[in-house]
Structures are given as C-alpha cells and as structure tokens.
Image 1 (cartoon, rainbow, N blue to C red):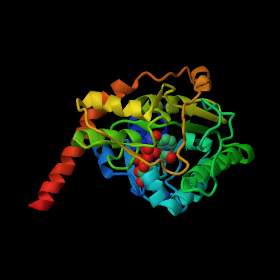
Image 2 (cartoon, protein in one colour):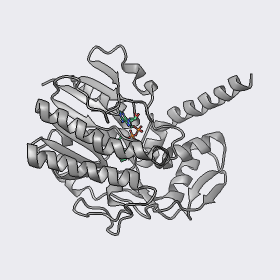
Image 3 (cartoon, helix red, strand yellow):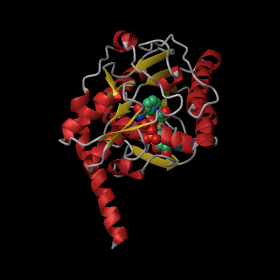
Length: 322
Ligand code: NAD
C-alpha cells in the first residue's frame, strides 16, 4: 500500500537516494532539509514529481508536516570535515532533531527509521563489528560531536520504542559512496576520485594500512528499505564487508582512472579508526540482504558524477578568472 513518508536530510547524499527509492515504490514523500551540508541539486530531478514535496526547515526546532505513515531520519552532517566544522549543530541535530522527529512518529503512529552509524563503535577493539559490541568511543575528542550525538540518538530511539511503543528501526550504516556524495567533504572515496581526476597526488593518511569497507549507495538503500518493513527494533549493520586498506583503495582509484600519480602520506587524524568492517550476519538472516556492487563496479558507476564535479570546478575557476 502506498504510504506518506517523511524523510529528513532529503537534500543530502543518502536522503536523496532514499527519496528516489521510496517514490519508485509508489509512495508520497515529504522531504525536509536545512541545506547545512545538502544541495538542492540532489533533488532537482524530483521537482516536477506530483508525489514529492520539499520543505526547507531545521529539524532541531519542533515542526509538523501533517500525518505520515513513516519517518526516515537522515538529517545530520556526516563527514568528519562537516561535523567538525558544524560541531554544535551536529550535537543538536542528533539530540533535539532526533527527539522532534520521534515525536512526529509518536503523534501519528508512524514507523520510524534512524540513520545511525558505524561510528557508534568508535575505534573498535572487536573485529569485524557485530551489533552486540558497545564500542570504544572517546567522549570528548574531536569526533565526539558526531559519535556521541549518534549514540544519544540510538538511546532516544530505543526509549521511544520502550516507553511509547513506536515501531522503531536503527540502521548502523558503514562507509557508503556513490553519485551525489559531496565532492569536497573529505570522505575517502570522494577525496581519492576528485584528486585522481584533477591529476593531483592522492592523499593517504598514516601509512594507509588502516582498513575500511565501502558500500555502494543502491545496496545500502535496498537494505534500509527492507529493514523499515520488519519488526526489528535493535540496531542492524548495513555495509559491505569486503575490507580494503586505504592504500589499496587509492591504487584501485588510480587504476580505474588510468593515472599512476604519487601518493601523498599525511599524519593520521586523532581517533581515526584503524579498522572497520561490518559483521552483516544479522542483515543477511533478517533481511535476506547481501551487497551486490563491489568496489570496482561502484567506482565505475560513480565516475561520471565525479567527472561532472571536476568539470564544474574548472568552469567555476574559468568564470572567476574571466
Ligand atoms: P549528507 O551530509 O549528504 O546529508 C545529510 C543531510 O542532512 C544534508 O542534506 C543536510 O543539509 C541535512 N541536515 C543536517 N542538519 C539538518 C537539520 N538540523 N535540519 C534539517 N536538515 C539537516 O550526508 P549523508 O552521507 O547523506 O548522511 C545521511 C545520514 O546517514 C546521516 O545521518 C549520517 O550520519 C548517516 N550515515 C552516513 C554514512 C555514509 O557513509 N554516507 C555512514 C554512516 C551514517
């Protein structure tokens, strides 16, 4: 049955892909965003769509867009560059913002799905990370504005289920990439792709032996939509468990783009996790879900988008110089 759904953070990378997926299933979608880190470009293709409505608003202030069947809470700065620049805003959106959206779900009896993160595991001592692991987070370090806000959000979501019986879902998202990822927000894939396409040396932090696992956006959205239809309230990891060192990933990007450029090694940022790999046993069992797009294919699918970003940069520079 078609539903009326609220998506917060709709103008962001994942929020906009989620709008597409839920509209494609025949639903009516109301997207909200304050454009802190998102872009109207990500929603431009939906502006003629009768079942889509957009409202520019900050979810940290109470709001009401009318009755909905489902709430997907994706609003939050997400890259280290963004959340360290917007530290207080990140704490607020992960606390007041989450509570405001939970109130909407409670008021209208809507289901609720919160975009949580592998950052809840911090710099993990358990590998791969399984949902039952409570994490190793520095509560006062530079990343804490994000990690602790996300952990607070998880507590709030669990409490609204426990005290108010809201049908809540918690997805712990591991590194996800694809078209519409902000070009210059310092995330691994966008950084490497943009640098390689500009013909610059690729930046690798530390000696590049730290590992990450990279999930392509369509796989992630598929897992999230499946999770939203279950009765599972405990956190569920969604990510691609194939583990890459950052150096291997940089070499893969160079191979794809056909450049051999240098690698520039930079000091490791404080509290940078040494390894990240989701244990997706639960998602496989519960959702019958499995990532399908491996790194090489996902990079190929993202290439045109990053090429367009580099071209826009060049045009911008030319028009400023003119
Ligand atoms: P993004 O920055 O592209 O999108 C976040 C969106 O939220 C932006 O459009 C931003 O403007 C909006 N926003 C921020 N504060 C807001 C506020 N107060 N009111 C309304 N809108 C607000 O990031 P993304 O990668 O699409 O991440 C989406 C969600 O998924 C975030 O909650 C993030 O923590 C989570 N997540 C993403 C990843 C990933 O790899 N992309 C990994 C783990 C978790």
